[in-house]
Image: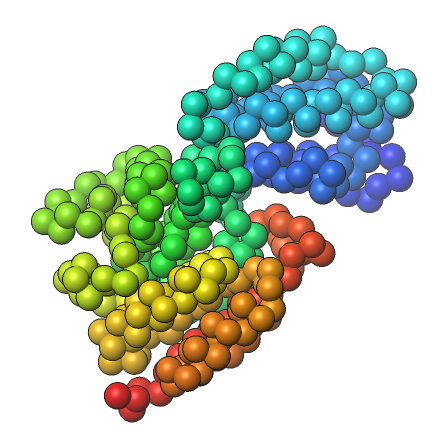
Length: 346
């Protein structure tokens, strides 16, 4: 059992749980608060720390990026050296083992992250280790996706039992979280780039291994899974041609969601086509929840002005502080909007 953390009021087991949570989802090492966990740590406690992080069964089966694990262990070793604390043999053995594996990851640059959820559930996602892969930015989880998940935990009634369509799902963090945590009636995760859609399908199947596969004759639906609580689908969806997708035969959305899909003017018109289509399909009775990282204020404002011109009403929501999902709230300005349209609009 961990000794009491020096000069800290947090219980050691709680500090360990937070460190594990941050490690599993790949939080940058310099953003992890260790709560004094390493300041006076025994061999037994070092072993427990390793067992809950780099030796965790999830990590062994679905490994995080090797370079990240190396940096994690390097930080521990450096801190213990600074504190004149003897290091456990396993610490060096694991560190050297990872160094020997460096550069041997999936040729496409894929690794995994694990997001611990309320209720002792976990989302495991295959992501690209590269910032941009094959011309797409959709192969990793972005800040706005995590912020949207946090927002959803505080507004469950708006998503529970609903039919939900997500635009630009990427690797699926937000959509899979909603499927697991909100129990929607049906949720369709969609994207367009082939490598993204393929990875999205793998992640849905990975996170719902007991779900019953449902047959569909729509060639754009890449998988359809009944997990008992919800129907979860993955769809190849080109916003410009959404009217030819037969999505109306699959779902009539109550809620439309999107995270980090407003960053390029070239996407604005296709995105507006998709939004207009869904609102027309539902007789303007659905709601669009949009989460954005404000990289350029003018770019975001241009899109919001397009929505206003198209007779949409925009309400800016409060962005919840990171709790269940971790991101650097000081480095990124996240904005979340609820978008509706007057039912009488024609």
